[in-house]
Image (cartoon, rainbow, N blue to C red; front, side):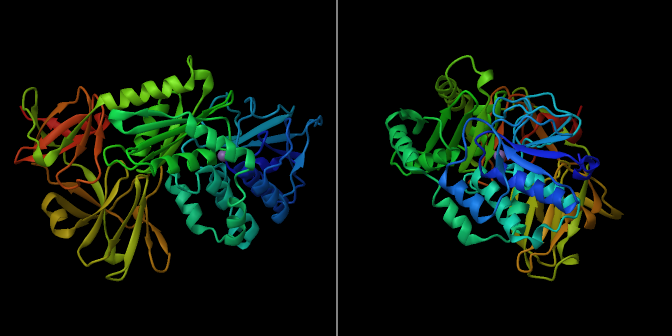
Length: 493
Ligand SMILES: [Mn+2]
């Protein structure tokens, strides 16, 4: 959906979820400004049993002059109702009758969505979704410091001070906003009420320690999700605790934060594992978080989390490629299908020795431009630097442009000037020379593989994925996704 599609309506009401948080308020406020600028008179409100009382939000409302109204008894029927940071029909938003409904959100979809909706479940905050929609309409976001501060604070508080932020679009927004730092500081230091301080203290007493996995689980009472970040960060400081899951369970949602300082447990992967099929989870290698829908649980959240943690630790076999030789039983010989990839000579975009940041769906990579540095764009949009010599050994580079679109277009930024370019626009097509042969077989178990070239970060494989080694180097072991294997390899008969 584009925001301009909503401009056919005149009588517009924007509604946050009940007990609004900073993200809901920021998103609604941004939309309010968008419609104002388009000549409309939008009405911005929230409902439910409680009026906003948390001190950080009180500061936000007064310092930013956010025109939101508390309307527990709202009974007008507007032409268009937009619910932000929630989905119309969900239990956390009081139902308002309306002739038309639009939804803008970033949670898991749990209702049947109306035609007018924009729900991006893998984005860190609703503010990011609104920011992207407004940007698309050419709204001068960067001319309004209050708006930028509101959007930033929405993302900041929904991702535990950005630490659980996972999507590159969130990073794009946080990089581009020039916000009022003093105000952010003031709000984030008024985040915990005295009541919540007691919740934090009581939560520590309810801990469950899994000795053999050096893992601690802490249950808190329902609270502001930021408390979970505080708890899990603190617990991880403890000797003999390498992984921590802090969670609370309320009738509306189960929220959890994951922290890990073990190189054998990626927090984002564990978060995704805990929530699989029940909600969503993700973040970074060391810090992550997620949500579980309570209606999908048939037993207490704590039991589910403990069971899944147990399964997680049981399931994975850890392998270090440099000390491993795969058992060839059941393996077949395959050859690589000549693949079309995209390549960019960075020297064509940036002066030599420029430091650049490459942003991809998997994360940011920094490198320095040298005359022989190329970027390679793989078939899933993964981007990585490669030296010209290595590139030419395995690929035939053409003069034809590389035409491809991905869910998130990879981009590269000059780290000094901040100028950003979409990588694909500069890419030329290249085709693999083929000939490389591997031994491979499908995995029947979960594996974490530390490859020979990266001993810090593992690659996870699940049953169905392929484990392979090069025919000419038995320690060059890697994992190939089941969804890609047939596109990438054919069997040598
Ligand atoms: Mn939110």
